[in-house]
Image (cartoon, rainbow, N blue to C red; front, side, top):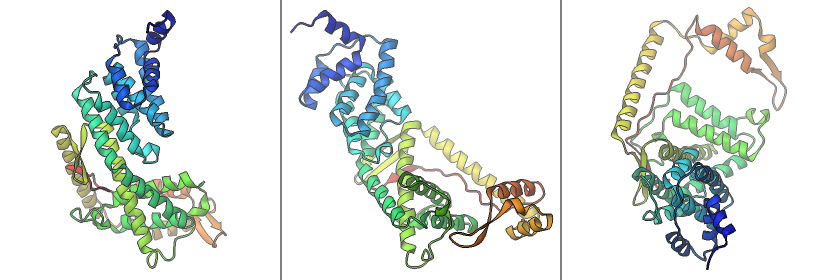
Length: 374
């Protein structure tokens, strides 16, 4: 059937939109691929580049709304017309991260697989294809990540009034006492993870809470009195779930931002460096970080006794100034509370004249990130 001049003109004025429309007219994904085989690829222009960029955002909208046909058609059209640029934009913008869509990764896996299914029709550099393969591999455990996310939401909701302060007290205690982890422990054992990883988990719990409820001061007033007793397992499981979920998000960031790839090995997804120089750089940074921590530790002990919180309070009463930095809070229980202004002022004042005890976490180096079905 011949095309009218207006149809032909529209095809070249909006090549991506036009191709998406033709693909959506196909009855199946296989028919979409057959449609692509009959297409003629236009020359690359600034207008085409701008339209591809716009459709990267459109793809994110389709994924967010779970519009599978539109998402697959948009993906196929973009990679057919300008694969390298389209994949670069998707990677840069994090469009194929399951964490951005409530960890619903099955559609992301299908979209990535659709792009890989037409690799013989597109012109894409090997690293772009490798990225799509990695996204598809990581999507295999997105369902596990969703389960972890749901477990976190349920725990946060069930212990809404005390969960935030309790989690922060637990993590702060680990930092203060110098938590020692065992990297050789099982991935389902909380002993495996460092205090830094627990701090990241606490941050994720806070973000999850804020997505569910408006945060106000009342959520930082009470600690669960059963946190070390009957409810200890609740917080152990909550923090462990949050740690494992941060590992999934970390994998997404590594794939999008650094030369890393993901491969499926049985029930495990292995995220590893493609470039050995990146590996060496991370290891060197870890070694230097450990050396600096040892130097600071030696300096701390060589320069005298650290200033304790009790000393800070005593000096505050002696010198005055607590009238604006200490407030009496009546609810839910009567207590004195130091304001953040006090903490900032005292930290600045004592930093030059005395040493404050502080915990500084060292860097981390990974030969690879192993996500054992989360």
